[in-house]
Each structure stands twice: as structure tokens, then as C-alpha cells.
Length: 362
Image (cartoon, rainbow, N blue to C red):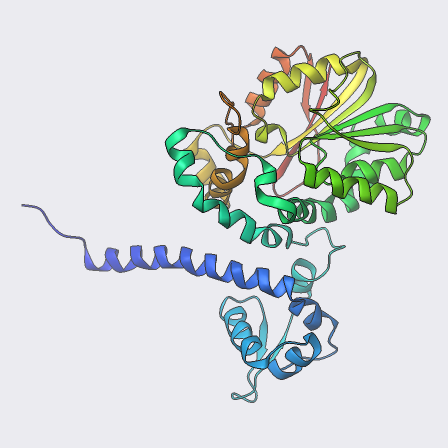
């Protein structure tokens, strides 16, 4: 005789399910808080503000702001002073300011929320992707997709790439200071390569990507910063040279997105000098689903983003590898690199909540 669901377990499962929906809806409210400047208004205030204050300082309608603040308090993102229960006042903790309002702080987290609408729009295309097996590239997310990725990674990179990451690679800072050719493959909107170009004016840099939105932003960034030792090119129009001319190659969070990562590693091997080094930065991942779920509290987020973005990109061409967000654990990265002809593969002692850093040499 079949038994129905246990009433207590049924309630718990329903709670778990609607918690996911709550998070999705609150993510939309975070997007609005960032886009409308509400977090910045709160961060700039000398004392807690009520909804009328926030509305006045942001040029918005109070009733809408009031409902938004209610969501944010319930989600534990805003602090609330309920001394006057009918007119609470709101503020950001120092930690919330860093994550929600300070674009210069390494912990700033608004990038993925910036591109949230563009990401969620892909839901309309995904049923066909599931049926056909074919995904879509990053330009399917439009201009805001490129901006969002840049806002996700730029604060940490600006604070840590030159003073922390590069010194961890033996001899690289000295060679960059003296002057070498550098390629940043999958450069996106150019933050990392522009940071390096500014720090090492004797070296020349080329950023390669296939996103026209990202490349346009990158070129504007280089001009605005007055950098004449960096240029950005579409790798489909100007192929990465395979003449062993680059002393340093970097790839930041992009190999797992590529349709043919093994071929790219072979290209990098041919592009790099015999004494050069490749800085491979990619998402920390474990070998199995079970391990990822057990060890990574953001596993559900990453697998979901993979479907809507990373794996979709990795399947945007016929017979794409389809690695996905958590598809390049260290063992696979090393196996692919050695298959491409690299002889040295080591993990760098760089702490990051999401990424692993590898030093790869011919």
C-alpha cells in the first residue's frame, strides 16, 4: 500500500522550494537597489534614513521605496531602527556598504545583479537549447552582460592582481618590469589587462576576446586611461599568433566557457616563449557532483549560472566541449595542459572565495 507524503516533510520541502523563489525575487530587488542608486544613498548618509528621506535623495516615489526597503529588511540586507514602528529608519552595516555600495572594495558584489535581467531573459531561449543541445555566446546577454561581468571581477582584480597575484609567480614581475609581450585571452571588458598595462609600461599587451560588447568597453577603457601599450582585438578577426612570442599569457575565468578549451590550450602553448608562463585562473571545482554539493555552499548557484551562461557559452558551437562553471577541476585543467604540451603545472598560494590560480609553464 502506497503512503502519501509525510506532512512535516512536505511542509519542509515546500519551505525549501519557496526559499529559492524568495531568493530569486530578492535578487531582483538587489538589482533595483543598485540600478536606482538606493544603496549609494544609504551609504552616503550620516545617519539612518526613513523611506521618505531615501526617496527624496534618490528622486524616486516614496511608496515604491518603502516597499523595497521592507523586502531588504526582511532579507536581512538592510538594518532597521523600529523606534518609531510606523516610520522605521534604515541603514547599511559597514559590511553591507562594502558589498552593496563600494565599487572599489574587493568584496563588492553587484556585478552579477547588474546583469540579472539579461541573464534571466535567456530562460525564454533555454527550452530550445535543451532540445537542440546548442547554446548561445556571451553577446546574447547584450551590453549589460559584459558590464556585469566586469563589475563582478574588477574590484578584486584591481586590489590584488598586481600586488598579490603576480608576485606569487616566480620571475614574472621582474620580466614585466623589463618589458615583454603579454596576451590576455578572454580579456572581457579589459580590466585585468589594463591594470597590468598601467603597472608595467615597458611591456606590451594584447587583449583577445570574441564579445563585441566587451571589446568596445575595453577599448574605451584603454583610451580613457591613456594607455598606449595595450590593444584589444577580436580573436576571430586577428588570430592569436602561434610564433612563441608571448612571455606571459593570462586567462581569467574563461577557459571553462570556451567551446574548445583543449584547442585553446594548444594555441597558448604555441604562442608562449620557451621560458614563458601562463597564469590560468578558473573557478574552483571538485571532481564530482557529490563533492561540489558537499564542499561548495554556492554549488546550486553555480550550476544554475552554468545553464544560463557558462555552459551555454561552452555549447554555443557545434560539438562544443560544454565544461560549464564547475567543469574544470584542477585535475582536468592539469590533464588538458599537459596534453597541450605544458610540462609544469602548480597551484599558486592565492586566496580567493571562487577562483583557483595555476602557474603553467612549457
